Image (cartoon, rainbow, N blue to C red; front, side, top):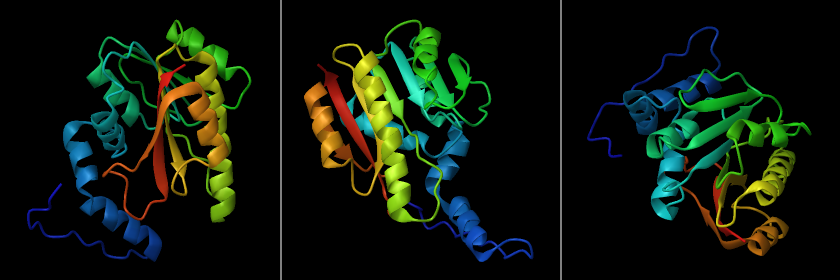
Length: 217
């Protein structure tokens, strides 16, 4: 992802644009992953986080049924569809998501009691891969934000443990350097290996990490 000496795009501060939003826009315009996503037809730069995690851990090959939790805008499901075109894929998100060929999309809250059964019904059977890119809406208080997101991760893990086929994989976004000790202990009880990783596509300043639990017992 070398810049090759390319000039940096600067954004003029508009009257109605805050300095913070100007910085965000400038970062987007100069982000090589954003440019690459646009060129390669991915809906978000997050697609490369999954691609880089798969390059390291190899969980996409052979996947037959995949659940994508926190689907929007759809980059991860696009990666799955390209890597394993024959796999059944179902995604869920509170936000509306434009259709993706070969992906069943549920617009609802994953925390809804009805969500797990609806996901499995749409998938047509037990998954061998559960992906979670879910994160709670931030309130600006780091500890609160981390706790709210970890609650989502805990729920996603409980779902994965309940529905994954033996040998299956669970991949989830976590914060603050990784999952807490209790969560890791739960993963180790239910999976053969549990690893943390921060793929190159994850911005250096971001607090996000990912946990990859493979070999569902």
